Length: 396
Length: 165
Image (cartoon, rainbow over all chains, first blue to last red; front, side):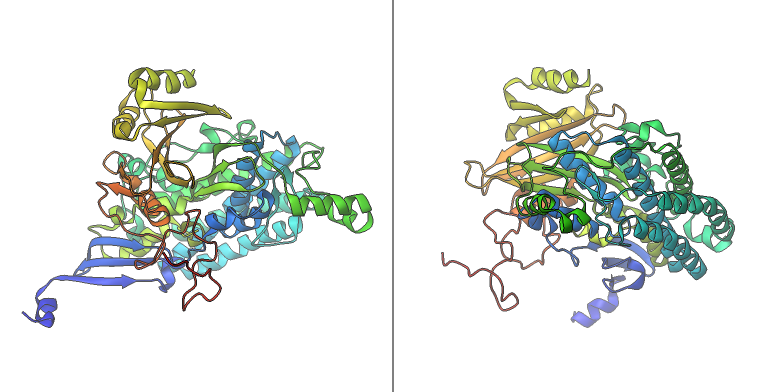
C-alpha cells in the first residue's frame, strides 16, 4: 500500500494545534489524534518558552532572582514574588514584621483576582463571548493601577523582597483598594448574568472535561481545578502562611469536576479574595514594612543619592548579596493556578546551589490527555481555558 | 506528633534501608537506598498513618564531584493528614532509577524533566523523552558542567567552545 492509500484508509488523523493558535493561551502545542472530530489522544508538547530560569538562578545572588520570578506566571507576578521570597526567608529563618505580612496578603490576593479575571475573560473569548474579556480587562486595569501606585510597575512588579516589601502600602493605595472592592462584587454579578445562565456557556462547559477527585490527585492537579473536583485543599487554610489564619474566608469546591465547576470555583474565589483583602486592609497594623536588618534589606533609594553611608550600604548589598545557611527547604503557597512551590538547595553561599520551581501550570497540563480523550475537538478549547495554563511558568 | 510518625515509623519499618534522616526548618528528609525506593514510596502512600496520596514534585539535583553524582528528590504531601515529607535517593552517572509513575501517575512529566535536564534514566517510565529541550538536543542543561550560555554552534555564536573529548 502506498503512503497515500494508507492515509486514506486510516480513520485516525493527527492534527497539530498550536503553538501559534490564539486559544492555546500562549505557546501550547497539542498533538491531537482524531477519529473524525473525536479525540483519541491529546499530547501536549511544551518547551517553546523555555528560558532556563533555574539555570540562571544558580548564577545569581538571592536578591537578584526576584525580577525573574515576575516572568514566570506573568499574570500574577505578586504570587511568584511571594513564593520565592518566602522560600528564602524560610532558609534564613527570618520573621518579617506584621505589617509586611498584611501587605503581602493584599498584594497576593489582588493578583489572584487579576489572574482569575483574565482566565475567565480569555476563556469566554475562546468560546465566543468577547464582551467578557473586555469587561474583565476593565477590572484588571484597576488592579494594575493599584500595583502601579504601590511599586511603579504594572506587570513585572518585583515588589515583594526578601525581608518584607520594597515600598510601603500608602493611604492612597488603601483608598484605591477599598474603592475597587466596592466596585468588584457588582461587576462579578454582571459577568455571572452573562455567563452562568447562558445556554451556550452551559452547553460548552457542563459535563466537559470531567475528572474525578482521585484521578485529579493522582495526576498532581492543584488549585481551583482540583477544588472543582471536590477536594477541599487550599494551602492558605491547611498550612496557613503569612496571616491567613487570622481572616475569615471560605474555600469553594465543585461537585462534578467539569469545566463549568472550574469556572464557578474561580468566580467564587474572586469574591473570597475580595473578602480577605477587605479584612487585611482594614486590620493592617502600623509599623515597619521590612525587617530592620541591613544585610538583607537595602536602604531606601532616596537616601542612596544623599547619604554616603547609604550609598556604601547599597553598593555592598547589590554587589555582595547575603549568605544563607546550608540546607534545603521547600516552601509552597496557594497561587492562583495551584500550588506554587520553591525548592532551594543552599551550600551556604550567596547563590542558590539548586533552585527548582514547582509550577502549577506544568503539573496541571499533564491532565489534558485525561480530560480531552473521548471528547470533541471544540471541547479542547474549553478544557485548555479551564486549566488556565500560563507558559511563562509552565516552560520556565 | 507528625514528626514522630514521619521519622520513627519509617525508620522502624525500613531500618537499614534509610541511610540518613535530616530535620531542617521542620522539614523531614529521608535519604534512602535506591533498591528499596519503590517499597518505601509504596509504604508511605498506603500506610494509614502516613498516607502521602499526593506527589507534589520530583526534582533532580547535580552534586558534581561527589561519588554518586545525582540526587532525585520526591516531595510528598498528604491531603488528609496535612503533612509533608521528602524522600531522596542518590544515583551515579549512568545509573537508573525506578520510575514511580505506577504509584503516582503525576510523576510522568517531572521524571521526563529530570531526564531532559540531568540525563537520569527512569526504568519503567511509559514515555521517557525530552520535555523542554528539542528532541535532538545534545547534553543536559542543568548539569553543573553544562555552561550557562550553552555550547558554541552555528545557532549559538556566544556559547562556550566545546572541548574535544
